[in-house]
Length: 300
Image 1 (cartoon, rainbow, N blue to C red):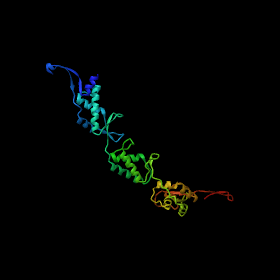
Image 2: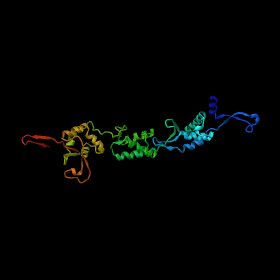
Image 3: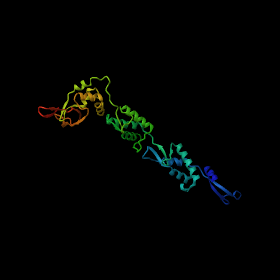
C-alpha cells in the first residue's frame, strides 16, 4: 500500500500485466501507467464559472466540482471512483493551481473562494450620501454596512464583516460627518455638542427669549434655544442632547421650564401657525398653588 501511494503521488497508476501485442515479447511484464498532471487551464476555466456567495462578498465554487473535472480529465473516472491516493494527488494539484490564481480553500465550506474586487470610490460616495440625508441623526450600523457593501460590490451580503479597506472608509467618513466611529446600541451617533466651560450666562441668554403660547401653556421653541446658545448649525438630535445637558437643564428649570422636549403641531399654537410644520418646544413647568381663601388649586 505504501508503494501504491508513492506511485500515485508521482502520477503512476496501479500495476497491470502487459504482453504481446501491446508490448514486444521481450518487454512483457508488470507496468504502471503514467498519468498527466492536472491541466491548469482546465482549473482556471472552472474557476471563472464560480458564482457569488450570499453570506460574504466573494466568489465561491465547491471543491468537488473542480476535483471531479480534474479526475475525469486525468484518470477518466468519476471522483468517487478514484483511489484515496489518486484523490489526494488531484486535490494537491488543484489546490496549488487555485492559489496561484488568487483563490484559497475554505475548509469550513469545502469550497474555493476569492474576494470580490472593491469599488472604494462608490462605497465612500454612498456612505457620504447616507450621512448627508440623515443630517446629524443617529444612523443604524446595518444601514451603514449595507450602503458600503452596495457601493463596493453592487449588492449586500448577510455578513456584517467589512474588508479592512472598507472599515477604514467607514471610520474616515463617519469622522468627516461628525459621528463617533464606535457604535452604541446598534447605531452610530453624532459627537455630542458641549458648551464651552467659560459659558456662564446661560440663564441670562435663555431668559431673554420670548416664549410662544400653546394650548399646553407657554413654551420656548427648541430652535430659539439653540440659536441663543450660538449653536445654530447643530442637528435636531444634537439639540435634544444639548437640552438634556446638566447645565442647560438646570438653567431651564431655574426659569420655570421643563428640561424635556415636546412636539407641538401647528394647531397646538395660539394663534395657530400657518407653516404646517410640527415644532419641538420646551414647555413651561405647570405649578400648583393652593389658595386657602378660595379653596381652589390654581395652575400657573
